Structure formats: C-alpha cells, structure tokens
Amino acid sequence: MEASTQREAGRDVDWDEIERSPEFQELVKRRKAFVLPGTIFFLAWYMSFILLTAYAEDFMSRRVYEGLTVGYCLALTQFVMVLVLGLWYLRKSDHEFDPLAAKAIEKYEGPHQRFATADDHGDEVGSRAATPSTEPRP
Figure: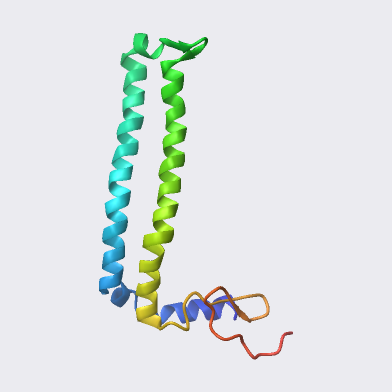
C-alpha cells in the first residue's frame, strides 16, 4: 500500500468518535493519573536540588566519601530517578495503557484490521495485521 493510500485511508477514521468512546476516556484518565503525579514529583525533586545547590552550599559541599560530596550524590539521584520513572512508565504502558488503547481501536475498527501496515511490496505486515495482500510483487 502506498503512503498516499494510507493517508487517504486515515481520513476515513472518525477521531471524534474514538475520543468520545469510554475505552479511550479510560485510557486518558489512567494515563493522566500516572503522568501528572510523576511529572510533579520529578519537577519537585529537580527544583529542590537546584535550590539546595543555590542556597545550601555548606550542606551540598559536605564530604560523604573522599572526594564525593552530598551535591554529587544528589546530582546522581537525578539520573536514577529518570531511569526509574522511565522504566516504570514502560511497564505501566505495556500492562495497562497499551491494552486499553487496543480495546479502543478494536471497538472502532474490529479485531482484524488493528495495526496493519504495508511493507515496500504492498503486503500488510505486523503482529496484528490482516490477511496478506494478494497483489503480485513488482
């Protein structure tokens, strides 16, 4: 399937209907319930680090071990926090958000047309693709 044909097929999608569906509303609600607190926590932690760096120089310069200071330790926790939040989001996405998105799509399109895409030869591919194209390859 050519890219222009895919775009034309995308125009037939009633995005407003999908947006109003209870499945999509549940997806948005659950995702927001995870992302908003995570973002607030991240920003609070980061701003606390910045404020400590600016106003608590004595505390941040205390040595923990040889040349390692409290400031360096707290700076390293920023990387750990980003890694943990990212992995947590991926896990939550795999187990909760993706199944909800699949339900919303399935209800709209039906189970056979989900996530089907075309390769360079026009054959539909993907883990959930519909039946392959019967058109001859060029």
